[in-house]
Length: 153
Image (cartoon, rainbow, N blue to C red):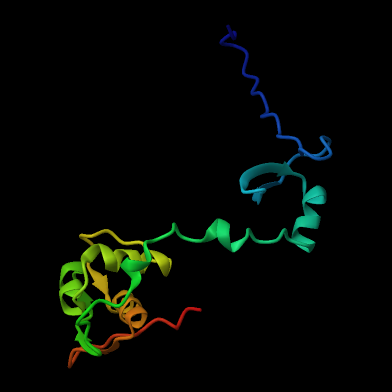
């Protein structure tokens, strides 16, 4: 128990570099090695090679979205060639206009790296991603300004 007259404050112990174990860690690095996250605490000196020559990005297979049934991604029967949409549309409305099931639209969005919930309204740019996937030309409803995102590769 500490004496009430003792007003000493203890200094925090610095985390030492995991590489040299001599200098305090100043860089807290997380990267992927063999598909696993690796956390490293490094001093500025030991971390410098990572900034001069950063590690390669994980493979595309590591980052790719989960596999989706190809039938979910196919153009729906009766899908229109063109469509006019407002600035915001519900998943149900978009699925009805495209003659697709709502979960098919969600699957399309996941493969394009867009994650939404079924209740979340879709903005024009998100709806445009789905329409582009199905080959549907899209235009905003008269009097609505909407900007499409740049094409993704």
